Amino acid sequence: MVNDPKALWDNCLHLIKENVTEQQYRTWFEPIVFESYNEGTRTLLVQVPSMYVYEYLEEYYVGLLSKVIIRCFGQGAKLSYRVVTDKTNGLSQDVEAEEPVNIEPAPVATRANKAPTTLDAAVPQDLNPQLDIHKTFQNFIEGNSNKLPRTVGLSIAEHPGKSTFNPFFVFGPSGCGKTHLINAIGVKCKEMYQHKRVLYVSARLFQVQFTDAVRQNTVNDFIQFYQTIDVLIVDDIQEWATASKTLDTFFHIFDHLFRNGKQIILASDRPPVDLSGVKDRLLTRFACGLIAELEQPNVELCKDILTAKCRRDGLKIPEDVIQFIAETANGSVRDLEGVINSLLAYSVVYNSNIDMRLAERVIKRAVKVDNKPLTVDDILDKVCDHYSVSQQHVLSRSRKRDYVLVRQVSMYLAQKYTKMPASRIGQLIGGRDHSTVIHSCSTIEQRMKIDKAFLSEVSSIENSFKLKK
Image 1: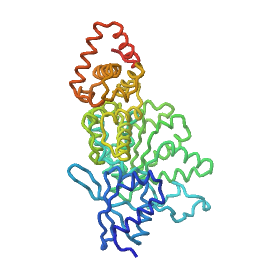
Image 2: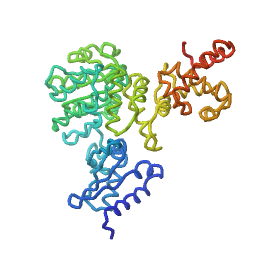
Image 3: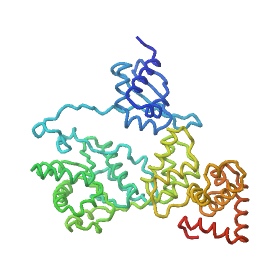
Image 4: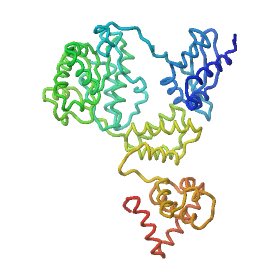
């Protein structure tokens, strides 16, 4: 029998390797480092390289980890993480693993032994609030664009149904943080008042549930279930604009909750007055509490959001890369998160540092905008395509005239169409220094003054960018 904790952990890894793909094992399990095992508390402590890896393991592999640890260390063994938050200064944070979700819950006798649904959870302790526990006030960064909604939201969470902010109607464009805010309210409220029945539901799911209730002739049960909620949070209600029967049913639920002092929180991509198809009797109720607008975050708030997320995930991103992402993500928190998650994945999978070139490539794939700023990669693509040469040759140390010309034109256009300093442009185009970039720009400018054919050639490349000079 093997008693050495390190050997037992190696057995765990062996079992994990048999249950995941080779790529998954190398990416998520190979970087885990055994730290210690406490016999008294039956706690296994392992180190992971970042908060991102910890969250990914907890979200997708908590069940697998729990099974193999119990199998190797015995029943009652627990897992704890030491998350590296600052590699440079050797800082880390200890986090306990969450309990895995019960894969085979006890059967619930409802509706002739049919599979239970959300509506079967009428007993208070059985109600799943359907909240995203990662969307909290702690990581909802405050700025001028969200100060009022955030402040009001926190007040509602602390005193649900007891303020003048009922209903709380928050609206704003896609990606501005509406879903995060209303989830944060629910999470905070549930933390402070565990006995309260808090429920988050999307407008689409509500409509699907209502349609099923109509088909099964259980509309009264549907309404009664929602009338038991203490804090009802409904997202994307603009999707009900043409669903008159759903709106009529929601009116009865809304009226009952409101009259009984229950908190109602609604989110939409537009204010109540622009919700076409919604009857006046419901619109007036939406407007009787507080209507708050969430604006798109400006560049400064985007930078703060990125910096906070990097700090939490233990990720090192240069300031110029953060500035570039903040300026390019169009004020969309969702785009910011997508870019950071992509950078994290690249960093973990390829064990590489994050630089401007990687950020440009990720932005190009993650952010879809009409007036997306040109990147150095965009310019290199166009110039190399125009002169029919490969980027590999242009980025090399070759002094061949054709490659030098393409290199110089690329540097000139990068200096003209991006906000990057000469030193950064030089690094991205073959690792040259800033003096090389300055010399190249001067050379191209002088030649365009005396060579009309060359001027026309460069202008043709610029026209392919579809930008105004």
